[in-house]
Length: 70
Image: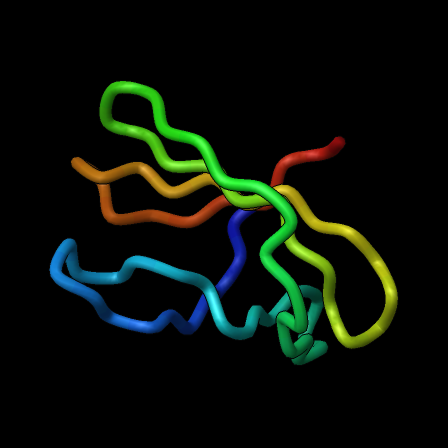
C-alpha cells in the first residue's frame, strides 16, 4: 500500500521517517524500532503515536514509500 512519508533528510536524502499519512490519517513516528537495507531498498519498523507498529519500505531507485504488513 502506498503511503506518504515525511523524513529527516540526511546525507542520503530522505533518510529517516518522522511521520506518515495513511488513509488520510497523520501519524507521528515516536520510535524507529529497527532498520535494515537490501540492494535498492530500505526498511524501517516504526512505532506511531497511535501505539501501532508499521513496516515501511522505501525504494531508492523509485523514491517511493510503501506500507508493508508485518
